[in-house]
Image (tube, rainbow, N blue to C red; front, side, top):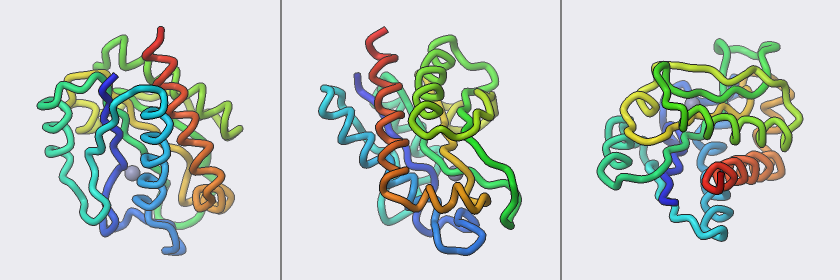
Length: 181
Ligand SMILES: [Zn+2]
């Protein structure tokens, strides 16, 4: 399949960092995206990034690229935040659009279950939201939140190469399973 992997935000996006300022969300998103690409390319898929390493690409450009290239799937990778200081909110959640297709929901299920298994983190459920990248894409689209930068324990995990790879392999596995079923 031809798939867009979208690392949310950009290196300089305001606010998108941990309360201690030591993790930019894009650093996590980008590292995971890179490993997802490696895994899926090895499985024969074609991967296109909608983000860039050195600037924040507007959401409209990201979805326009997906629609123009007529990719089969769009998967956006994020780390979560609740409020601005450290707190107890934790776990993994996966989003589809409020009027998501059955295929989007099926893709969401594969990725969500794989992420829960691979990380052992709390299941916050599969949710629906009116996010631009989900609303404005014309193919199955999912947005994953791999843990909270505002939770001390999860922030420590999000910073590690091991957790980034664990998430990436789970996301790639979920996408590949979806493509074969
Ligand atoms: Zn984000």
